[in-house]
Amino acid sequence: MKLAGIRVLELSQYLPGPYLCRMMADHGAEVVKVEPPSGEPSRRMGTPVAGQTVYFRETHRHKKSIVLDLKTAEGREVLMALAEESDVLVESFRPGVVDRLGIGYAAIRERSPGIVYCSLSAFGQSGSLRERPAHDLSIQAMSGFLPLGCGPDGAPVLPGVPAADMAGALTALSGILMALLRKARTGQGDYVDVAMLDALLAWTPHFADRVFVHGKAPVPPVERWWGGTAFYNVYRTADGGHVTLGGSEPKFIENLLGALGRPDLIELAKQGAGPHQEPVKAFLANVFATRTRDEWVAWFAERDVCFAPVCDLTQAYAAVQTRARGMVLDDPEAGGRLGTPIKFAAEPGRETGRAPEFGEHTQEILDGLGHAAGARTRAEGRR
Image 1 (cartoon, rainbow, N blue to C red):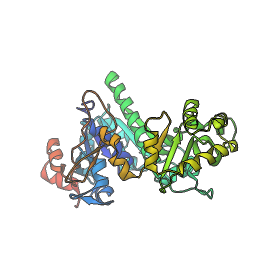
Image 2 (cartoon, rainbow, N blue to C red):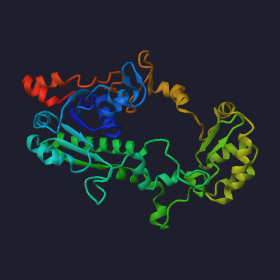
Image 3 (cartoon, rainbow, N blue to C red):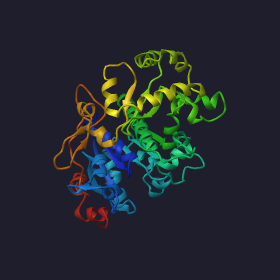
C-alpha cells in the first residue's frame, strides 16, 4: 500500500484532523490516535451501531488508540518517545497550546529531526485571530462563503456541508504528502501550518475576478454559479422533486432547447448570466413542471446535456454509480460503510477495517516502547 511503513501520531479531534488521518490509514499508514482521558468527542456524537457511533467509526477506521494525559510529565514523555518512531504528527489544538505543553514542533524536532509536524487550526499560527476559537460555520462566515448560499430573502442560510472542515483536512493531507515526498528525497522533515480559513479562501479562483477586477462581492441571484443562468439552475418537477442543469456550454444549450422545440431561445441562453436569462428560465421551469423527477431522468438518459436529479443522502448512497465506485459498502453488522475516494490501480486502499475501542492499544504501544507498568498507569491518567 502507498503509505505502508509510515507512522502517524494523531492529536486531533472531531472532523478535520481525524478525517485526514483516516485517509492516510486507508492507504496503509499506521495511525496512532492519542486520546485524552475523556476520549475522542465523536465517540459520543450521533447514532451508535455495534457499540460505536457511525461518526467515530467513519473517521477512525484502521487506527490504534492510546490514552495519554498530556498534562502530565509521564504522558508527554510517552508522546516524545512515540514521536521518535513516527514520520508524521498531526495536531489541531489552538495555536500556542502545544508549546505550553512542551510538545510543539521545536520540542518534537529535537527528539525526532525528520518529523513532518502538521498543525491544523481555524486561523493558522499567525495573525491577530490565531487564538480565536472557531468551527466550520464561523470559518464559512468569515471566508465569504456563507453569503453565497442565501435563501430567497437574501439572508445567509446554514451550509449543507462542512466545507471549511473538509477543505482544511484535504489541504493538510496534501501538505503532509508533499513534505513526506521531500523527506524521502532529502531526509529532512518540515512544519506544515494549515488554516481552515486559508483552505476555504483558496477554493475561490473561479469567482475571484469579482473582487480583484470589479472590487465587489458576487451577487448570487444574478451570477452564473448561483442561479443567474438558465443552464446552471435548479428546477421543480411535477411530483415536488427537483432536477438541475449544470453546464452552459453551447452544445448543451443547443441539444436541450433543440430537443424541446425552442431553438429560438438558444442565442439568448448563450449570452451569459444576467436578467436577460429570465425568459429561458421561465420556459424551462414550466417544462420541468410537466413531468416527475424520475420521468425526466429517463428522458435525459440518452441526451448529451449536463443534467442531474436532486437526491437526498439515502438516494445518493443507494445510487448505482455510488455502488459501482465502491463508495458505499455493505456491512450487515454496522449497516454500511463509506469507501475511500482515492482509487489506485495497484495497492488499493483499505475500506473495511474497524475503528479502535477507547484505549484499546495503550498497553501494546507502551510495551513496544519498553515502559514499566507504573509509568504506563501514570501515562494513561484516570479512566
